[in-house]
Image 1: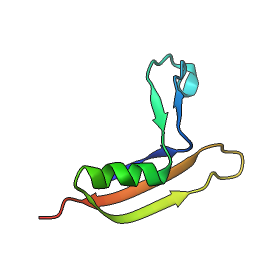
Image 2 (image 1 turned 90 degrees about the vertical axis):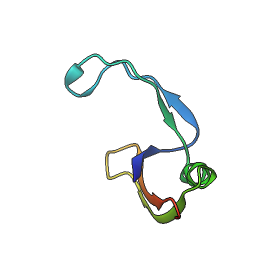
Image 3 (image 1 turned 90 degrees about the horizontal axis):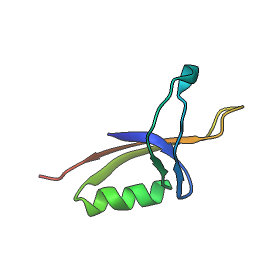
Image 4 (image 1 turned 135 degrees about the vertical axis):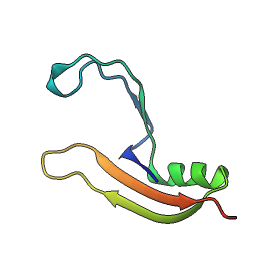
Length: 71
């Protein structure tokens, strides 16, 4: 299972997490078709793809992919 925020190719480097806590990481937003291609390129077969559009007031799309490696 792979899940997270998706979007047009972009990079985010937040400095604060929820509650104002300092963080330092890089987040790469990729569109769902690109993630599917990467999974298939790594030898996985896609079972399920769920893309949830942002709720009212939210800005990011969330996607979940369920894949398996064929025996």
